[in-house]
Length: 338
Ligand code: ES4
Ligand code: ZN
Image (cartoon, rainbow, N blue to C red; front, side, top):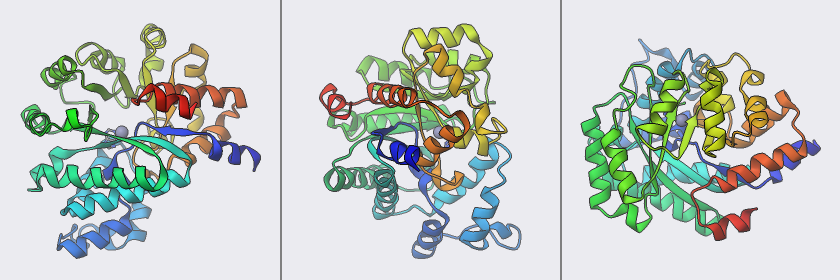
């Protein structure tokens, strides 16, 4: 339809996609076989029998932690540099087809290091995927390293130190830091020291907050981490005062509507606070989060929002402009995209 074509053509930026969340069941089985990695015993876990049975299971996540248990098993098949490159390249091909011009993508090094994969294998594989997307598509890309909240902060400190010592932030191989995984449980400010160091070095900072957790998680990300963006941030609907502050401070929320429904944050897309954010002047972008697990990439998120909210062309242009302006990319590139 006409609006679908309009959304396809809109110059999109993606700010919230986990590369490990782009691992399709098909690629998971291929890499498991190639690398000799065993997936869970199908006697006990029949959903690991085939890509089809996994896709079926992915229709019924009950929570963030239920999803994460699959996400961390899935990524165990990633072993060699070429695996990381192939994963990133598969994502960029789909993003390009969906009309993404600029992508800032997350990855979770701690999990890979704990499995005995070298940090350099992960980074060089993902960087190679990014460079290919830049060369073949003229996309701009940035890699954001996420710390995971279910592992000790000392592990996060180790990967941060490795990245700094390797000069990855100075060279541009890495562009910023984030924090993801389980929200409710771990301390809200567990990466405070790392974020303080990042701030002092001028490294960009974002953090998942207010996905399942209450607004105090968002306040902690803004205050203890001096986070420049908030990933998700949907629980801002429970604090009108913090919502106003986020609007005034021009903090970009990276919202993932399909993810929010799949992980039961809302029972329907129409409950995602798109209208509330637009009316309050809160800036946000629309993103795919873990597209291989949630049944669709970024354009599917744009179209699902349109079906639920019937936004005007002017509102879509505002969303597209805010996501360009909220990108961590040179002004020259922003002007090109606007
Ligand atoms: C994630 Cl949906 C979501 N929330 C928090 N952490 C994550 N890591 C990958 N997907
Ligand atoms: Zn996420």
